[in-house]
Image (spheres, rainbow, N blue to C red):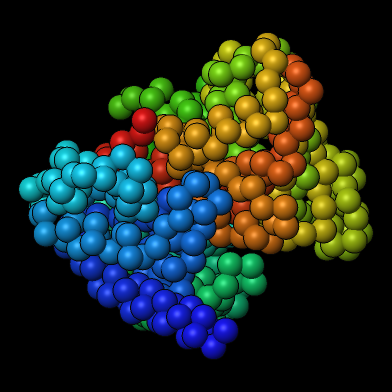
Length: 483
């Protein structure tokens, strides 16, 4: 028994040492090559030794094969020697693919072939990058700031240049804004440093100089005075949702496009990245990233409809409360929303079911929807009750969605979990649009019920960021390629 204990501990210490050796290689690829590495879509940039080991351990839930840092380290080391151009490379999937399909091949030849599209292309994206302005600095605005700063890289991608807010009234307004970015009750502390420049009304965030601009109207700012050019303005206030309101941003010098972080009205295209982003063209100056719920359910609905066909269905969202509700009972223009969010489940409406049709026209008129706001601060659950055109089974449906989450063009939108113990707080910080809970799947021939978790704050913000990257033309190839 003593020997067995020693062996397990020795193996653990060895994995720790290897993971520690991976950290500078991951950082080098990111800073010098603009390569974002992950393990089965779990980011490993700026992560701890334990985080890297846990990302490898997670693979056992999705694959029959175990994955260790001992498998991925040689691949990571080879990648640093190939003068790679910008890319998103999943070293976990490369390691499993080599174990299952590449045995007998030379590892270097295998890796070189899998990433051939970007080999020798170091420095191919040497440009100034895209200026981004956050108009509003609430829940989504602050998370967008975290994501943009985290992915600033060498400054050739999305560059956060300014934050626009209304004057809060406090003398130390800038300090309060910085504090809300630095500390978050749900998502934890900001991973970095924030310096306040009171004299110039700016924040220096991990070395990124971000101007804070006070304004009461979208059309009252000359961004060019701050050196900002052709910026994409991300309006996360929710105050303006039509072309007339959002169009005010375009009147400002230095603005090129506007992206709304809420469902757009009228003819504004509602974009769910991964599903209908191909509809965006150069003439589209105002776009919407739809809602968090629409982003969570549309990729899964597309996958199901592509394979089995959807005759009709109902979507029920169990949604965490938001700032739109009252902490305690008070007047609210909306039905039921005036009652205390922290004490009640509140039945309310959602436009997500109808909004799906804007991204998936083939489902127009086929879905109904409703919502229940519940006393949790973040992470929501969509229950998809669907009548299918073809019969299937629990295993058949789950196996299909698992494959989609790993090997399809929707693998950055759909995650898959099959643990019987997960609860909502386990998905705080998830970067996926939605996570299929396989243990909860119900199938009765041509009828199925799917449960899809989603971080309605952070997961949605990641989807918004993907739309931003597309608009800026900074979407790197994802490797290995989907099957």
